[in-house]
Length: 356
Image (tube, rainbow, N blue to C red):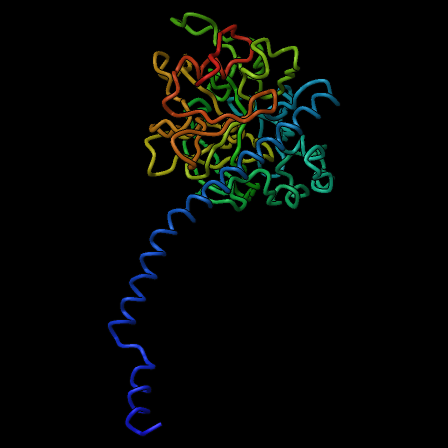
């Protein structure tokens, strides 16, 4: 081959700048087309994991009920107890006392977490230093991959204004109490147990008469402090009653461990909400509470008010909820308010449509 032809071949064997820019542009277009599909696939995977978590907990609740004879309460406490332990006095205005262990701790053996359960000394308060190791274990079954605002253990806050119905945020406990986080909470029904007056907080099964209210203030959901709900107690049917639901950390802190007297759930600065007292760490309610906007159902899932005691998900325009029969349903924030109330009560006698 002559030197001249060799030079021509060598010149044609490379890429021009224009050709390189065209190739880069094609790659960029392909990436832009594929990225939404990848993001959608990841979102679907996160939602699937959240549904699977709820189904695991539903199975654990069913096995607990079969073994014990009742579903676990939202949390436990001795309403007669008076005293102090490890820097915390009790009872508070909502009669929260010791030991305080919550539903999540109680079902650990049914979630294949017997080792974590064994690390707790249930004869001590849930906030005792001897229980701090178990209380800070990060368990994936209680964490939704879509939730922001934190998945690591968090320091509990307290209130010091003496008003459990309208608590303030007085900062962290001293000494600090750190609990593992949960992105799922129990359903207390229409009314909030943590909003009751002290006189009617000893026994949440006792209806509280409220002046001007059409009926006594009853705790009508399946889970509250010291509840003893059985399958037979759910007169509306397990498939028509919400047991658990999502609650993202971006709304407020929640835990599966327990409830500490004088604890509060502070509002986030980006939500127009107020703190609630201890029981809200493990529960939510639907409203309309007779004390709190009685004519407005303010606690539909993902309601834009962002109350600390509503269910809230970051998967879309609603939340996944676990029904008593172990099935998981997606409930939109635009759900008919009366349907949401019907789903939240355990024995209200309402008729729930199949499509909601």
